[in-house]
Image 1: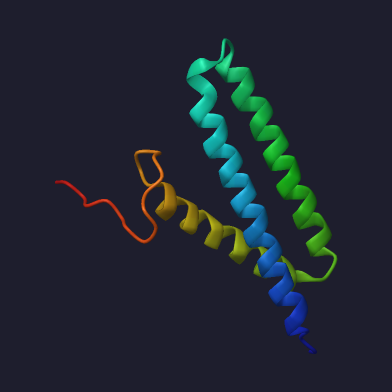
Image 2 (image 1 turned 120 degrees about the vertical axis):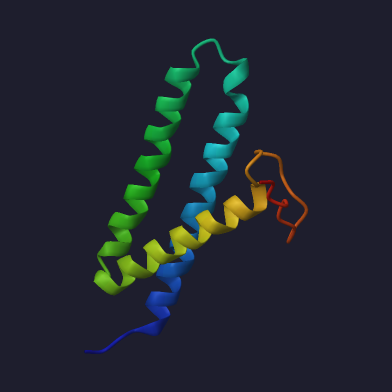
Length: 104
């Protein structure tokens, strides 16, 4: 089995970028829901657009093989972890590298 490390790294980067765009779009949508007259419709349409974009990117990455798809999924999950740590549980942007203290 020959592994092309460059394509795996590029698939991870594409998955990470896709994840950042997905979760940034989710954050943007949720922040604007209170001012909308039909928040449910806004949320569903946003989810369809974001999900469709992710599936399209993953479809093209999948053409490179299963290893590329797994690398892209790993990048997407890394973007999720990064986004959660950056935004925090309250939804407000946190200073970089600082997590809020947990209360019991």
